[in-house]
Image (tube, rainbow, N blue to C red; front, side, top):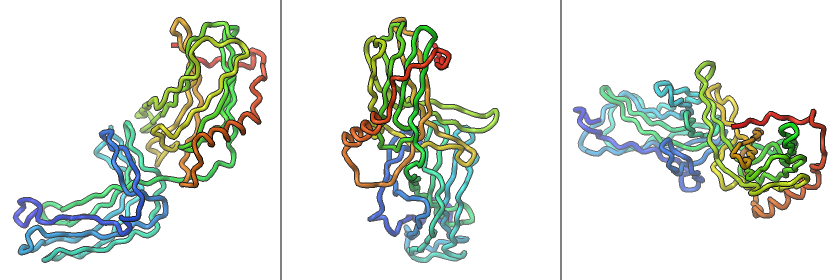
Length: 336
C-alpha cells in the first residue's frame, strides 16, 4: 500500500537461511494440484530473513511495526471463518518508524514444536506457514510462505498379523490374513486368502485401500471415504481349499500417516476392504483397519527384495489351514 493508498509501495520476501540445502517435498494444494515446499520436521529451527524492497527509492514507507510469525493452523472447510491455531510464535523485527531504503531483518524460531503432519483433505486443511507483516494505518502489507511438515515414527514394538474368518452360513467361509497391522508408507502388504467353503459362484475378488476422513464433533461430524486403490486378487471362481496370495505395494499410492483426533478437530484412518462379487453382481465385503506411519530415510532396498523378505517372514509364521466351526465364524458381511 503506497503513502496515498494506491498500490503497494514495498515488496516483501521471506528467505530461509538453508534454502539451498533444505529438502523439498511435494504436497497437494486445495485445488488438487501438487507443489513443492520446503520440508521440516518436529523440533527443527526455522530461521531466515525478511527482505523489504522499496519500489520507489525516493519515497519513505511509514509503518507501525514489522513482525514475523510462525503459525500452525487447522481450517475446516465448512467453517472457513475460523482458523484453529495450535502453534503461534511471534518475533518483532522493527519498532514503528520509517523505512527509507531497502533492507532485510533476520529472524529465528528455535527448536519449533510441529506436532502434526501437514495435510490437505476433502474437508480440512492443516498447514504451517511464516507470515511477515508490515503494520500500516490503512492496510497492512502481508507476505506468507507455506512449509510442509512430516512426522516420523519408529518401528512399532507390537505389530501383530491380522487374521479373520468371515462368511455366510452354509454358503461361504473364507479366512484371510495380512502379515502386519501397521505399515509404513513405502511398505508391502503381504497376505493370503484361504477358501474353507464355497457354495456361491464368485466371479471377482479385490482389495481396496480406503481412506476415511472424519471432521467435526458431536452432531456436526462429517465422514468422507476415498478409495485410494483397487487391487484385483482373483478373476474367476475359487474352489474349496484354494489359497490366494496377496502382495500389494503401497509406494505407488498417495497415502498419509494415520491421524487420530488431531487437535480434537479431525482424523484420517485407512482400511483394507476385501470385496467379493458373485455372478448375480451381489457384493460381499469385510473391512479391516490398518495403521500407516512414516519412517525416516534409510538405505533403501529394492521393492522386490522388500516383498520377498516380507513374504518369507509371513509364510514362515502363517497357519492358514485352520478350519473352525461355523459358530466361530463372523458373518458381519454386508450385502449391496
